[in-house]
Length: 339
Image (cartoon, rainbow, N blue to C red; front, side, top):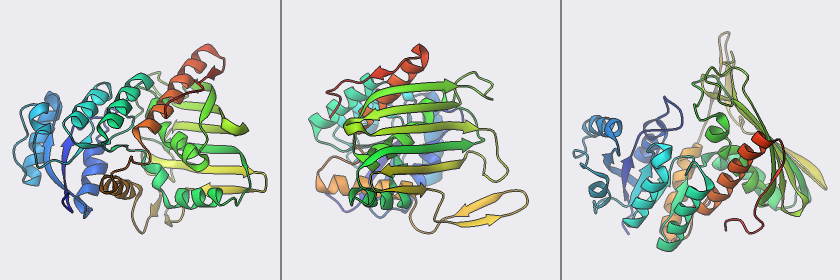
């Protein structure tokens, strides 16, 4: 395997009408990472092909392939960064894996647990890396907290409280449970290592015009008596938060011998002005660290962390939350679950 892996940027869509994580997040990170080189771009629909043609010219790359199969057959491509529309994402990821390519998949990996499970099965069958882009777990504060919990600094954890609230920006038509919940759920699972067995949820709409949920409150029962409460959603714009910026990203881990408070807005240089505040970070960001994990997993020939199987469990939790919110009753998850 070459020291530098060729990357195909596939698709430029997201859960929101103005989301383009491919160009806003992944392209900049791939462009500055020593382990990767963007060698091709492609779209899987008319809008995506138009964007791909424009981006190829801007980057000085060959014209995009006429179809997905041709793009995936390119021998210069080792990794596919998949950002096609969520309803087609699972099929695109499976096609890339079947073509022998490793995959970085935008969140969510799939819109349902059933589709996520299809992806995980192919990833396991092929032995290729399929990394869902749950990049918030790579925040340095989360990493430090994972080490502290694993070292027993709070004793045996019995509860986690999490707040993940975005201020401003365009609400997702799919609702913010589908849009954002993967991040704090993944962090709670990474912090504790305990799978979820029961879900009780409440969805609400406070200000979004489209009627989709803009806030979700999740009450989760995990293995070994652990519980967690996750508040996730989008608020109106706040004066001290950039548009679509994180207003709250924090966790409290309560254990038998102590409490660990994690504020993922720190460490940072905070500049406060009359009209707004800004956070300036020093060092690698979460998406850069995500690519470090992608490169390391490929080099070692191991599943990534998080893996496609992890994304299946998160999708199961989100599916259960939606069912619970509709019925007003808790939902039990399978004791077997996805491994």
